[in-house]
Amino acid sequence: MKRHAAWAALIAVGGCAVMGGPRVETAQTGEMVLRATKPLSFADAAQAAYGDSTLGRAVARLAHLPYDDGLPRGAVLVLPVRERLQARVHEEEAADREFQLGLAAADVGSYHRAADHFREALRAAPNRIDVRYNLGLALMQAGELTEATEVLETVALARPDDAESRYAFGSLLRRRRAYVRAYQEFDAALRADRSHTKAAFARAKTLEDLEKWDRAERAWREFLADFPDDPLADNARRSLEGLPGKRAAQS
Image 1 (cartoon, rainbow, N blue to C red):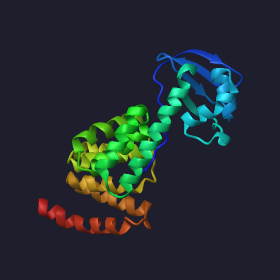
Image 2 (cartoon, rainbow, N blue to C red):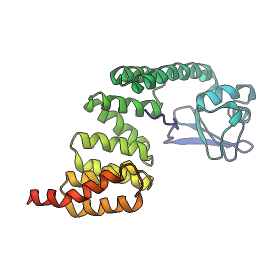
Image 3 (cartoon, rainbow, N blue to C red):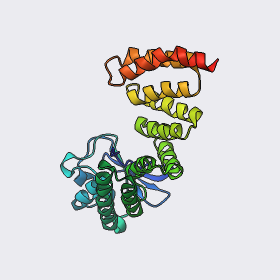
Image 4 (cartoon, rainbow, N blue to C red):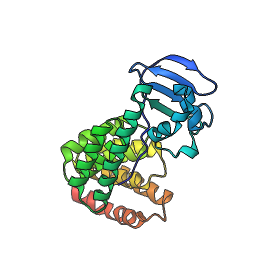
């Protein structure tokens, strides 16, 4: 299982105030949104958000970053009001415990147990998109395809420019034989990351599923031109060599 960073998506913001570099805004939900316009220590982030630099370690905990590393330029944090800060930290710690148990269960192939741990993590921290992503993967591996579809579609919609999220959703759709939509997800993954070899391979296979032989041939040739030394290259060559027989069998 692959852990993804939990960056929150902000839809509507109001009440902007600029405070000595970082921008602190108030969302319509009442939470605060801190935008780092330059590299920022967590003590300075806490001072900007709460007027109290001693809360920096709590802010770092919510950001899932080491306290000493600080925030990189361009980072965006969605933070609770001060009265909710410590409660949120405790929730995140509980979510992390369940998340790590889920990853450990997935590593040994216990996908149903992994999914249970990821669900518990989401109860503690429902906005953790990294947890939701891994829940979707565990459900897919466990054969719970209907629930996995809903989960991974939510992740793909939340992170439309993340190649791994789009590839995971495409893989699930292909398993469900929804080939047209699967192709669209693999194509989106490649637009986000041209070096995503698994998405390129899966896109070519999906064109075969759709019996788009000419396009499949082009896709395989593109794959071999772009990734000639990839571990999947031998499989791609065999697929390319097998296309004439598949085309003949169709006609």
